[in-house]
Image (cartoon, rainbow, N blue to C red):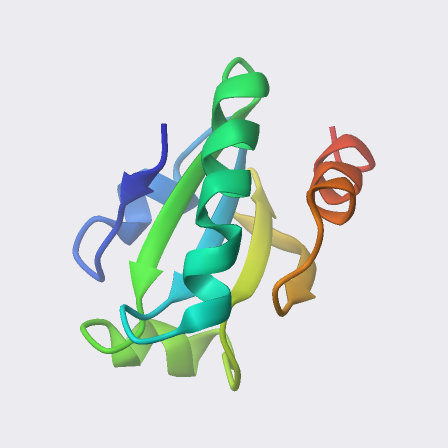
Length: 105
């Protein structure tokens, strides 16, 4: 299951998490964001022991989007032990998302 994260919960949800965290920077009005949402849910369930998936609404959390140089959405940033380790941008396939995760496990 994906988790909604905000500026206030980001340090706990992402930076302090011991397992991999895939952060989805998205917006309600973004069609491609809605397109990949089911894929993210599936990955969150499939890799639940090793992965946490967090969603950050860029309209409500502009400071975080700026801090991580999010210029287009969906932007998917993978964190490992609080460090940014990988990024995907756009409505990528399930296979591309899974590859992002497996190569960083």
